[in-house]
Length: 280
Image (cartoon, rainbow, N blue to C red; front, top):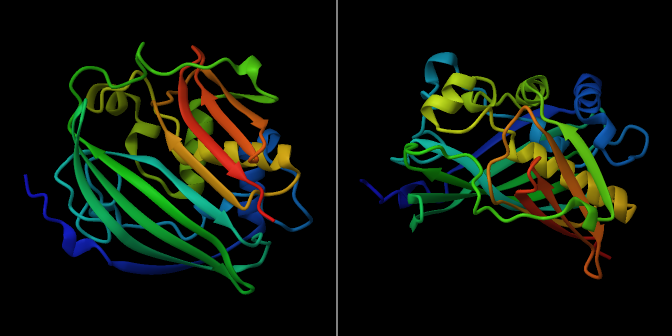
């Protein structure tokens, strides 16, 4: 296995987009009951994940539906890809009509050995700017894994939590339609979000996989709702796959530091854990 991918560190790309009324309407229609209140014309937090997505041609896709590796992202010799977590700093709200520029830089590529086999973590920094200046500064951690062996869905050893211990809980039905609409807004072609035979037979999950970014979007909106403002810093980490065709819980509570929250599947497994700081 070729693990010398340091040549990709420092690679940069830039793309632009527009915060349209249609996108704001789609975002509200898809996640509406579970978004924080915002001012007139302002975008809810994490709408930026729907802006300036990569748009590879159909013949430039890999077998998983993502852009084939070896372009902006390194050609990691491991087939399964997921978001592992990240951190966002919110500096200014995006607004309807804003022209947006996204700048991305590959910061690190690191191979590690895990309990499930070889892993590769790729760290990408993002800066999202509007006409008023920098709006979001972000770090994304992407993990690549070996091909599926035994089923890779949530297991009995996953950490568990109790929704009743939290201050506020949003119950979200993880329907295939919800997953499809979020994939459409983000132009995410990863097949395990909409192709159940691929998700179960190729990648080894129990069902379609709920997007990590969608879970993080719900958590940061819950944080903003509880704190009364969009947090300055939001951190999140995926712990266990969340699969579809169940109702999951988005749970949060205020703390001395700001906010802590989790997403829980129907059996109480922790799928994502998050924290937030309100800032000055």
